[in-house]
Image 1 (cartoon, each protein chain N blue to C red):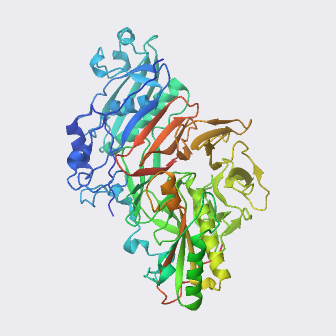
Image 2 (image 1 turned 90 degrees about the vertical axis):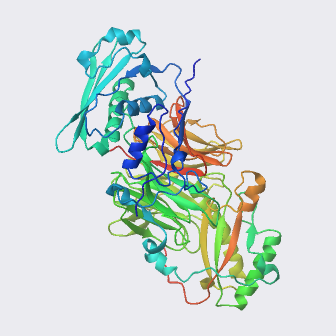
Image 3 (image 1 turned 90 degrees about the horizontal axis):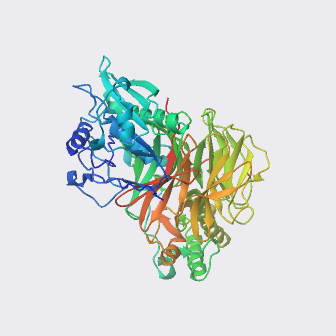
Length: 445
Length: 193
């Protein structure tokens, strides 16, 4: 099953010919008929001015990618940077020692990024970049990434990560991936796809397609596997699938609900929701090696949406045991008593915890609107971040700085990001149909 | 106050796609290409042979059939109020009609499909849809239907009957569908959690 996907975002300035070349090279010309639109919905008041000079190429085989363009797209997409247009650049240096800092300062840039591609033997490419402070002339960072031409886009995202970390002080999450579900049509002719793409929506790969619902993709901690729910048998089943090869395994198809899989931090277990033939969904932990099942909750309420704390000792989950959905915490070993975590309002569901364990994202009902909120777990303070009407499925970036979630605009479903400080956000929108259920993958290696 | 606002224009690849189907995010992927890099061959299809697994084999006998059509039996949908799993109004009569039929035809089998409107969290809605399906199941059991005749599934908000986004659409989506299955053979037992 080949699976060259269909979603593509390109900056307008990217030459169409290059685009065509990339697509033809990827065998993706046929049936490419949808594109995600990306737009920045909010940014900081004073974005950092930066110049990203086109990288010197390494003919003949340099992957045909505008590395500086990808870096610029990443940094501007973060809402924290504003890039100098290329036509206003005073020069085209490829190394730090060729940068005349005062010229770039005069052009309005606080920083300038220069770089070059070089053939590295055996068909490998090296990407080198330097980051220069234009006020002091000091080279702040210099780094080399090597890989195949096909991995050049990933290398470009790693350049973005390094620049972001140096200037903003937080590890960038550009060289990461996002899994999401797309839905087209209405029953009985629904078409579901599970897709994995780069965090900027590019480079999408089809993981699974079905005429029946696909839900709740969840990344293994090493980023190699996805767990998800598929109704392909018309009943629910939880599967795990190796992203690289497509190899997959059915891990739960019990009577009733099989849902909401979540990998333990050590990657050995799945927390999931099982309903049993008599209903009453509860949380269980499935050991993926031994197949042994441990019951975690036992309550006539709906208990679902388990999420591991980073230390693996506890699980957060949604329960309506108090009459409305709220979030609770319980030991992941079984036999514990849950502790209620959320108290504001009468709808808090779908917990997701930040990598450092300090913040909990959730869906909260604000008036008649379902929105994404983050609770500081130490103080209990809840802050609503999103402004939509039907926002769902928050998922933290691995650096904890940004959340991705799904939103509705009329009949359209889109993905959106929002920084946890609420200052920056962007939207990834399909032309038609619905995209939903995003899951932000872990840092790559 | 200069809130940064960039609209990234996109090169819509519609130009390239003569073989359009209606769809956006759910658009069909390209067919396998002999030139496609191996890494792109990672997809799986839930259709056909790839779906052969424990669940698929066990459920192979559960083909949908027309089922009885006389009177109220033609009505297969039970509707619910917001955040409620209480069978009400005509739903009571619909369930009673199917209960009578199923009790009198012990070889007949149905799948009870619970559904919700689109509001709120997806997996929590699976729970709500399940609660509705369980309400219908309990009512059928109380009226003499046997356990082996019934299968439960909740699709939550995933399979709306009405794709709209207002209360009128939502009211149509908060439902349990009674789907008749082929009476031949027995469903394979599935392990209970």
